[in-house]
Length: 79
Image (cartoon, rainbow, N blue to C red; front, top):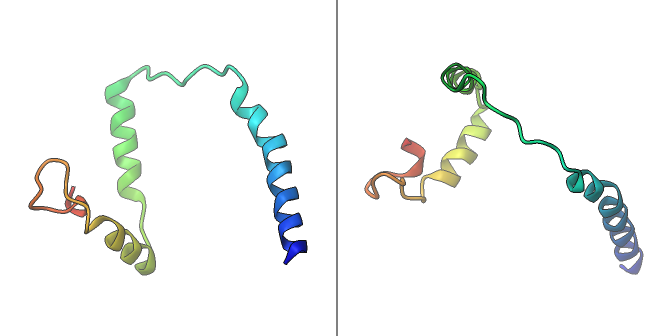
């Protein structure tokens, strides 16, 4: 048990050392140049994603209990 804790601690420590500096850099945020065109591109991309049956079940299980933001008589799955 103690060995597992030591390994997890080392993993966490190394993760912090290597990951955090990447977040600290002052990177400019991406800009939308053609909002209409890029929005359509993202919508088209969204509709090309096909979920496996198990992924679809997971999605339904996660979103069905959440009320839709627009109307509480529907679930977030319908939005």
